[in-house]
Length: 286
Image (cartoon, rainbow, N blue to C red; front, top):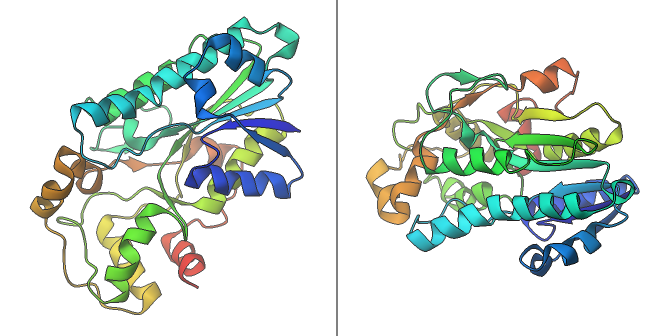
């Protein structure tokens, strides 16, 4: 199967691309220049592809200056709008049969527990970005299936979360963030790749899915598991004010988060290879 992918050179793109190639799919990247070029050129790039995977988006964990906020927003919302317009321009028989797009659990309010039916959304910057990102698909032609995965914190050897925490924890300098009570919705990178592959395997898997492991843990629970996996103590907490010095308002990404339930994947009998933090970190640190 021929698959075109935006964001193919990023961390998540590399993870998903590897899985798809192992499954003997042909994966072709869509250059960023086409996403910011003309709609006609982008439509020509999409011609003949069976599945479009959209992973485009600038990193959210950075200081939210006016410029950075614009880049974070436009790299998701404007890019998606451009893809939709390009697909609209294509002849019906030349359009992708399916679109699979990343989204984020940051759409949900930080209070309460959320499955896919929840409409209790975050009203801050992140929530607005994610809502508009998903809404940008609303004009996708009806004959194109759309699957959206709301991703939790993706964990893997090359994931930024793990790379930033590895040395402090290895040195015994790790600790909970803030009070550690905030939920920590996570998912192993291999389960992300498997979910994207699962979505394209057959029709009827359209819709919105929370892509986070079924285990509910807090940041404190993650900290304890990480320390245990590395056989190191984790007794030095990271105070909230220190994060605000580094990240400004973006520090809320680390100190506040929603609890998420992968209800729709469970209904579809999707089995997580790494359903809990212990098995996830064992694979990563082993």
